[in-house]
Length: 232
Image 1 (tube, rainbow, N blue to C red):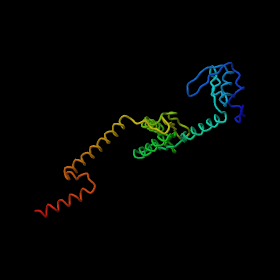
Image 2: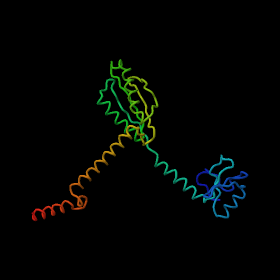
Image 3: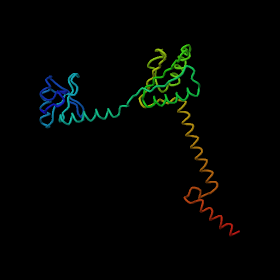
Image 4: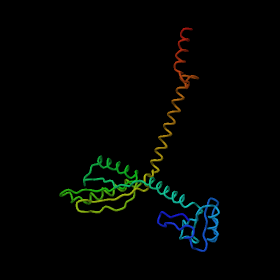
């Protein structure tokens, strides 16, 4: 049995003391007595590694234990690299934010959520502006509603001292769900561009005939026109 450098994270070979185990591999799985599984491992020159001890019966693989640990380490590293680093981005409002400023901050919030980050939006009440706390709450609720397709509300607007907070998290890390309206608009724009391209080709063909789409076609047409003029 090979030494377990992971502090006995997995039971291997004679450490597996149950009556029977399920062996899994590329060809499927089969349940055999543990003694038979150990014999199979010895015949193949590998180890019997328990990968799922809580299953009934426990699930094992016939594999070199050092290779198994390397695969586990590699898989964990790949999963860590794929994880989106999530940050909390702040958006600050005043209780009487104008429409232009609101739309500007709404755009940034969409970008933050699309990147997989959380958004903490808050209204800061300075001095007597605390009298407009209901107006601030309405603003935050509108903000949450306008971001509905990008994020979900983690915490409804709540007043903490002179600030009223709203917390949003992305619906799906790194990916924003497109609304049907946006998908329809993108499709219409693509169809319009394709139609413009077709029309341009038709116009060019009508103007230049056979040489319309040939490289250097304009020069050929100019030469032909010059020949026609000399003939006349």
